Image (cartoon, rainbow, N blue to C red):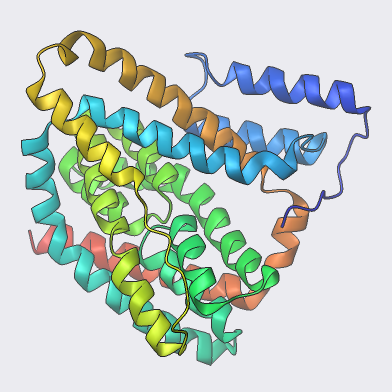
Length: 318
């Protein structure tokens, strides 16, 4: 997944690096929103190439974690607990129904068993983070993991633009939208990006519910180890969620945070915008071609299921 793809304009490395860094810095300004940053990343990677492709995955991972923790300094513990309780039942039902449906779709499409399970877990829990945690448990190879990540990243990119538009069209409240995108969008980066575009209340609810959802990586990984009969599989626990909780506690109970908190949140939002630029830059033509129709079809059908089922539940069963 990290191989360089065909690019339209072949230029020397220095110029390639200059263009990339200039656009990355441009994404730290007020002129660039998270969705636009994603598009800029896609454009620069496919027109001129990504000069730092081998560092992209690690940089994206660490920057996203930093940004999520920073957003915690703008949130209140009491509101977060309330949002977490409301999203708990949706979370449990959606996770297990999505994984079960994904298993049947994988058999129907005759998708590779491990690839199918990774796509199902990524859709059910938290996208790339879930895939990164589950992959060593089932001992998937590079191609299986890359295909699953490719499916998730493609759909994430679509969700960043589609969900706010649907939310506006259906006149969803910020509370409804925050809960919906936290459950129905795969990656935390796209969840936060879409919710921040919709409004501050949507952002708080979406971030809290999504991170609570991410903790389900642990029980799902344990069940996966049992199903795939792998007793030695290592589970990657998302420790940064603990730092996010500490940031919320500090913002709620420390008076000093009234002055510092807004600045930390501003930096975190810039970090998120840059993260989405890097995610877009990682989606070159090689990644898109490597996915294949059957895994992509499985991912799309699963995504449609969880998006529609969650939306109907939020609107009619609230």
